[in-house]
Length: 54
Image 1: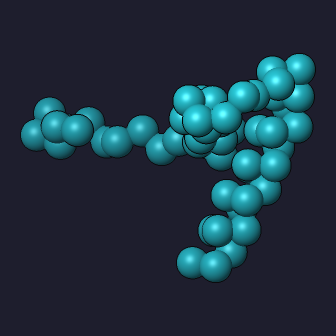
Image 2: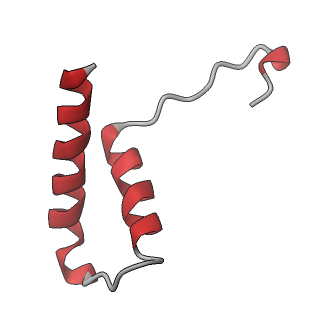
């Protein structure tokens, strides 16, 4: 990230964070992509809980 150009870092949405986590997880475990939305909703819920702890 180069802040010298005056750009602000893009804040990722919970969905974008969840998609990144799911993609990373797929390198280690077999993902049934038919359940993608359920996985993403579960990850998003976990991210929300982490925000509550802050």
